[in-house]
Image 1 (cartoon, rainbow, N blue to C red):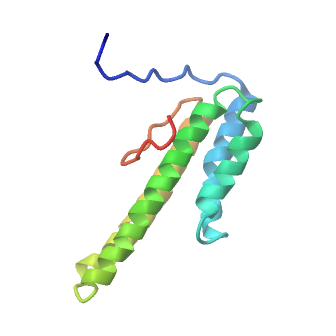
Image 2: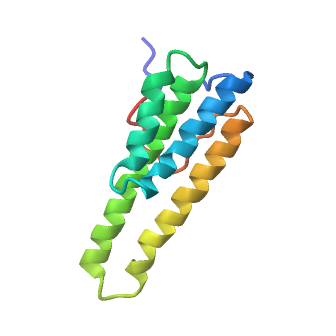
Length: 131
């Protein structure tokens, strides 16, 4: 019996323009978080993923990756505001939510750019909820 950790093999690059388009839409749909404050950044990619994961090659893996990213960064966002609440009398904690917001947008756009190139982008600081 092998007790070594399982290595996750990345899926091959997506070559179909239709697949690339849907995976890019999946990434961009997370920006719905600006419109549907609260859980829009999770609900929009979840809806795209559930609708198209069996039809579009590569979208299942990308969808799990995007949802892991959105849930993780939503947790980091909430923790940053808890940190602000606890240490709000200091100036430095007020910067953390802004840094997380800017990083979230940058990584989301970077993921969409990589998706349009047919590459599965692995987001940093992401907890693997879906494997």
